[in-house]
Amino acid sequence: MAKPQKSESAPVRLTQRAVEQVKTAIDRELVAKESGVRILLIDAGNGYRYDLAFESKVKPSDHVSTQGGLRVILDKSSIPYLEGTTLDFIDNQYGGGFVFVRPEEN
Figure 1 (spheres, rainbow, N blue to C red):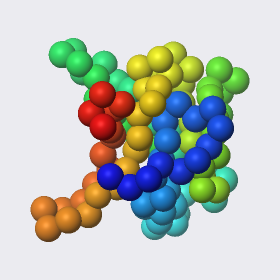
Figure 2 (cartoon, rainbow, N blue to C red):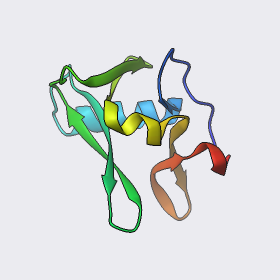
Figure 3 (cartoon, rainbow, N blue to C red):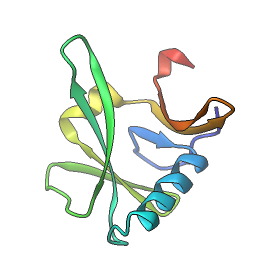
Figure 4 (spheres, rainbow, N blue to C red):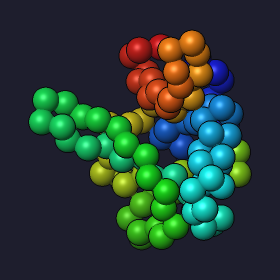
């Protein structure tokens, strides 16, 4: 796994590769430049799943950090479940994609 970006008080840390891939996707999808990435924790019935969405509007209750020049937005109610998680991007012979790594998985 790549090294997380340093950011004070960021419950979820993004690696440089993850930041670059999100920025590339923002450019490719023609999303507003001021948009950031919202990390969502969704109850899937038998556990949780993670999702990413581009977001330009921030709610007063959101936690916002900046990592590598990218705004990272979290719903405050998700923070206890996401604290210490790292978002990375992998690219190998099997394909590529974003990977969430929980602290107990390190």
